[in-house]
Image (tube, rainbow, N blue to C red; front, side, top):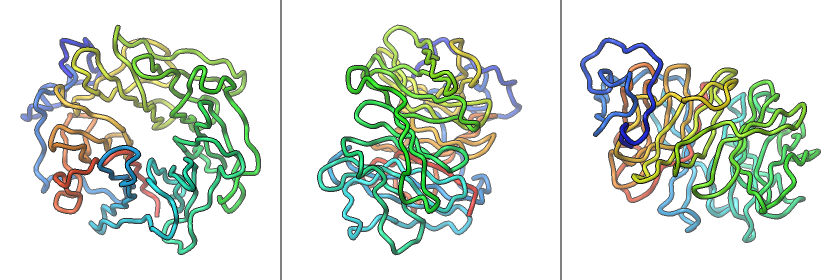
Length: 333
């Protein structure tokens, strides 16, 4: 996404370095962004869950778990689950469970599964029916937040994490004004989510104490935004699709500051799509990009200097015709 189309700059100090990414760190995205050598990949202790499919909703989606320490990749969904197109999985805060969406008996539902368990995932939305998507755990693991029939709901989880004891209906206008992709902040005070569809999508924030909601982002004309991901008390990420080029760019924004100019990390390739940010720690961000393959592949970028590495080359193939999306990282085991 050319920086001439979107005049945004990073506030971070330019770090010393000789790579193109490091030299461009103060100006946002990098044209034809290079990959760093696999031998310099950062040492990470955790695991990454993601889904892989040929096309959305075609029945080909599978869930995978990559272990950075063991350098192993495993498919974790099973035909015995009777769940079609499992995707958008998220770790519980303790790293022991996953919540994800998938189709069962023809309907989209949200499921909970304990990693490695022989027990099939539990359907958390069977009792409310309808179309259920975009699940995320609260930061304390006591609840999930989902999109249900165009609205946002928060479900209080039972102690075993396999059922919901109560639902809080947060928005009430159904498909009239669609709300989606919800994400709670660590304290639970704020809820970030998307309002609208297509080119009208914008980031909104609701104060969960007062239930007052405000538009939180101010994109340029013709741009739209989606996929807000809260990292911590201070920062959230989201993706902006630019008018004209239609390229996706990952942006970083302070949680407490509505409007204003977000930062454009130099890990973005200016000319291709960069999406689905998954914070790893204060410095690193996993995401999906089509800059290096014909389909979306998984990479990790350094927010300090813009360096980018392919994740698990040789194990996570970039040339199998499948898109790797919806990643989430945990350092817990």
